[in-house]
Image (tube, rainbow, N blue to C red; front, side, top):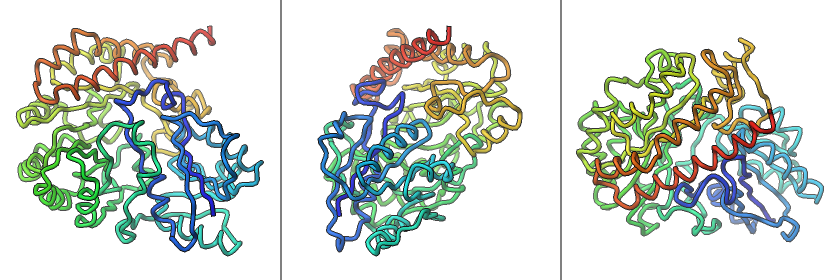
Length: 439
């Protein structure tokens, strides 16, 4: 049995496009699926990540199964690949966030679709396929990856294409309920953590002093997070991952996080508008932003802050002031995205009911195109403001000021800043090309 795994590209995440190696980390879906494949099938694997590599598919061998995992912005490319390999006689399986949100649509392009987490359904599919009776659809209602206790097959990936830190996931779920978030719609607000001992053994096996945790919300279950961070302390690793601002309020949790080796945090601030926070069901407290960043800085941790443009509470004035607000609170690496109403999320349902969805071309759902009509400005103006604030935040003057203000992070932080400067320039080029077509 020969199995080909593919992660398709999109407008943004594409070989030698907007993303650079300094911003690319190894995805784990394909390595996990390979690891979950029972040895009895004697499977041969190949994994392709179109975001970091260019492939001539005509030169590939025949594969019995082609498994494609796609998000909304890459799903049309996924459908193209499905059609190509189906014509060659391969059996097509599709899964991922978009397939979970729109399974009926995906079923028109694949022989089998998988919704939700695939840790159980992948093995069930393979058994049915081997017996000659695969189903059209498999629904993964909850994740139980901990029971499988497998280590992702990272050897299938081209490690040289990604940042040097290996990626690891301990807690797959998220207990937050942000209206716009695909992760919440995918996991249903559930917590799905692995056994801590298994994660520790996996980290030991990687033999790396640096780890990047991909957990969507590692501190949303404080009890698990405390036990996990405590178990990390003896490893003496350095790690980066995600968290929310409220971690600073739990002093015991914060202390364990720092002692466990945290050196970098991605934090979703999203907005400086109280109305927008309420709109998105985000629990952030704006008055705590600066104190949270300062607290991390005082403990040698750099902060990558994400910000979203296009909420109904946004105005032109409030968006264009964001670079100054961001500088005031002290974020080390800011990143911007346009609010994107992914299909079948609460945000999409609300905007669709209001007649405000402008595009149902999934290629546009890449966080740099405005796919809905904003409340206080036009979609074109929203895209223009994305370019404006991104470029303003990454002037040489602001990059240097951020580097001097927080001495922690050194060359790594500077490299990521430069990576985002390049990324922003390429995003602007993409949007301007689209604007010229519309003129």
